Image 1 (spheres, rainbow, N blue to C red):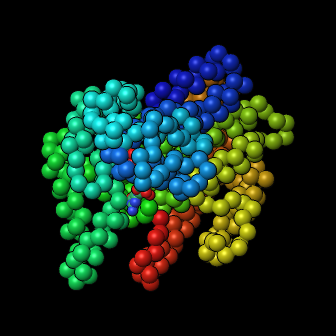
Image 2 (image 1 turned 45 degrees about the vertical axis):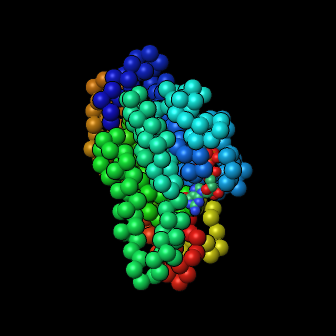
Image 3 (image 1 turned 90 degrees about the vertical axis):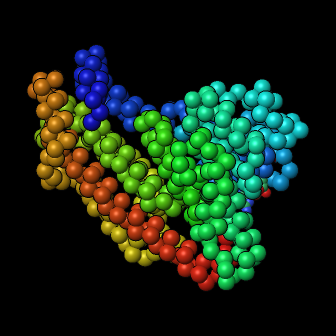
Length: 400
Ligand SMILES: Nc1nc2c(ncn2[C@@H]2O[C@H](COP(=O)(O)OP(=O)(O)OP(=O)(O)O)[C@@H](O)[C@H]2O)c(=O)[nH]1
Ligand SMILES: [Mg+2]
């Protein structure tokens, strides 16, 4: 629980009675969809800004809502791209610097209002340019954070491999040389070499796309971090770190879901000692499933899922159905449950009778989340192993 959760709950109950608690907590559960973030994606013309925005939104360049990409100057005006669920997280596709429309930093800053962005990604491909340095200096002088991103690493590696012939080529040395070139030019504008990210927008599972995503999340304030974490797609990023981050946030919501359910139970139902909000549980379980990149309850075994993953999932779904349906599984009361009940009873008096339902609900959700996490990590491991196997069999396969 956060420090101000209990005072807020108390205020809500004093104002609207217990019946207002459900609406209050439900609102809190949906808050992540309303958090606003403005991330400016800027840098050299043609560096891959629009392609990056498509990649981080889990889209291919030719998908319906993707940003337009191309070899000629494509992005002429700042354009915001959002996620379907969280439409206030905005990646701003900014025009490239170094074109006749935006030849230098002064014309760029006159036309692009850099103040309105929370943080920046400065993208470059190929050689480090004077424009990159000026952009980074400008952003830093505005006391805003930035991530320096070197794109098209796939192309560099391919070119270098061909140039040096297979025998003398060393990928690690090539990557270090590119990183050093960027870092040397940025000088004291970046804290360390680790502040330079080497990525390919076309091969997201390789190089540092995932490290960049983690760094962006870590730099955001808590509510923005949660909102962006829940918006990112596990299967697109194929990142175990993202699974763990999502699980942490989902676990942090459990007491709110259980308390919403317990608020229903606080109004006694004759003959029923435990009462649950079944619809709410189902919605939350489905939320776990989609967040963790797993197929839903009605998925078919059509060959797209490894058989043991399918079998484990069906097990979880079957036991959830029984537990949610029966409404009386015998779980103990966990520590969060005990804390919540204690606080609620001391704050509101014995009128709050939802303690036992709350504890049972917490344990049920926690247990389901634990099982789904394990399956999601197994599934990811298998997908990654398949991609690596394909790569070994055919090094030219362009896997995401
Ligand atoms: N190989 C490779 N090509 C890339 C990568 N990122 C972008 N491209 C290609 O580079 C070209 C330019 O990409 P865009 O995403 O349109 O670049 P941009 O920075 O938005 O360009 P402007 O809006 O014109 O400034 C396209 O042909 C992309 O497919 C990458 O990581 N690797
Ligand atoms: Mg563009």
